[in-house]
Image 1: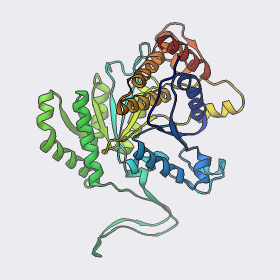
Image 2: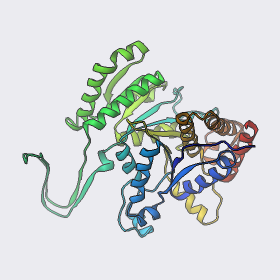
Image 3: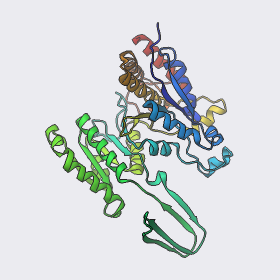
Image 4: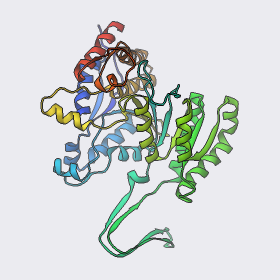
Amino acid sequence: MEKIKMTTPLVEMDGDEMTRILWQMIKDELLNPFVELRTEYYDLGLKHRDETNDQVTYDSAYANKKYGVAVKCATITPNAARVKEYDLKEMWKSPNGTIRAILDGTVFRAPIVVKGIEPCVKNWKRPITIARHAYGDVYKASEIRVPGPGKAELVYTAEDGTQIREIIADFKGSGVLQGMHNLDASITSFARSCFNYALDQKQDLWFSTKDTISKKYDHTFKDIFQEIYENEYKEQFEKAGITYFYTLIDDAVARIMKSEGGMIWACKNYDGDVMSDMISSAFGSLAMMTSVLVSPDGNFEYEAAHGTVQRHYYKHLKGEETSTNSVATIFAWTGALRKRGELDGLKDLMAFADKLEQATIQTIEEGKMTKDLALITTIPNPTVLNSREFICAIRENLEKMM
């Protein structure tokens, strides 16, 4: 069988721990045998990021802007324990935060729905898509560990030297400080991305913040969304028969739990991070969710919505068997390959991506799955496969489709 050709390389961002192991298995078993894979490779593993003083993260993001489509493996965002474990020069920032800041996009995350893996919330009938703002807030925050008594101020100095000051706190002892920011331009592009995606998907759009408490920060998000909706999208939404409405984040959570699903839920950066994990877990597993970062100038970065599966990696290092779910990582590759095929006019590449997704879902629906899914499936007597066996089972189904 002749391999499917590519014309433009994908930007490949390798990662850490167990997902890095799965990454190579997926390439060996599901991609390289069928596709003449062209990628521009960047190693975003924590050791290499440390060796390059995190320059490799910036290089990969600018490569994404150059080529248009990237696929990213899960990566470690180091904390104090990781700094010690990997003997790091410093506590490097989240690579996802860096990449999202450079691309200034919106992350859309939706669960992968499979027969036999029923949502924990019984009334959910349709997927719930999380639209996560991917710039700023806590992911680009500056922080201070306050050593003792003193006054903390928020200071803005304009180009002409004038200042705006707000007292944050009078510290009577030690504590912590955090400074966050966002940009009207980024919030505006986030809003337009959400409205356009809702029209494309013909789904209602919900947006939520906590503007009753955050009367300037969150309220700015609310106001920009409302203004753009009223001036640019209201008529289009009415014509499409879909709705936009804003509510507080706590009310949105309550409504979501009682809904049938089927909407797009737009969230600020941190809210979207947390809620996407909640949604994916409730629909089956953290490894059962697609994630794509879409920038205003037409760049796409596909990734799994979960972490590096640290616990399984430590078992793997001991030579113990793991049963790690690779579905979201497979779908990151299929999403990127499909988009690359769409942009380059390669129908064979797009069809391959569709077949690989179909083979993955078929494997699970046949009762062959990893342990996390076997624990929650309604399929009787499922076969629990280890990490490699699951990928090889998918290959068997894929080969029948080719």
